[in-house]
Image 1 (tube, rainbow, N blue to C red):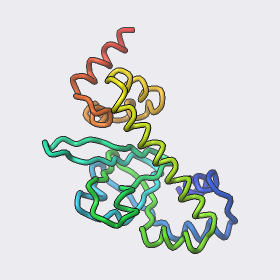
Image 2: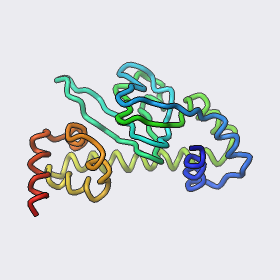
Image 3: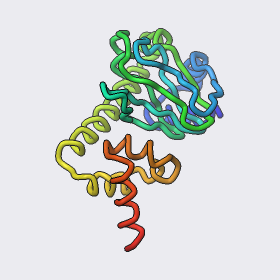
Length: 192
């Protein structure tokens, strides 16, 4: 399991074996059950997670009680309620394991301690933030300028794993469309 995390870190930054050992010493393995909640609305996000196996979902619930998914993290991806993680303010988001999952977790305190300890970790964090910014901006733009069909096609092109592995309810929540609209889009595509 550890090899995946090591490989991911080394794909982003240049670190010595000693630095890798130090970084890994701050991560803790966790086994999660399907639907287990890691963070609920109002809690401060005190951990970031690296997915070894499974899937984490970051979502919020609107005033009408409907959930809206912001992000899915599959294998070899990091996930946290980033705004809360950075500010230490209460989160408006939830983090949930949507499959039985194996993750490595690092606390906010230890993550920031590594910034002081290992200079390259600063670069790792910058890359992490850049990826998060680009991902969130692309999603926001798709909500503002694309119709349901275009959003669905984009999802199939960029992240077909979401459609393949997750329920229609979750996919619709991610695309910000109704399940009925998603079903129509899927049936149109299947008829081609």
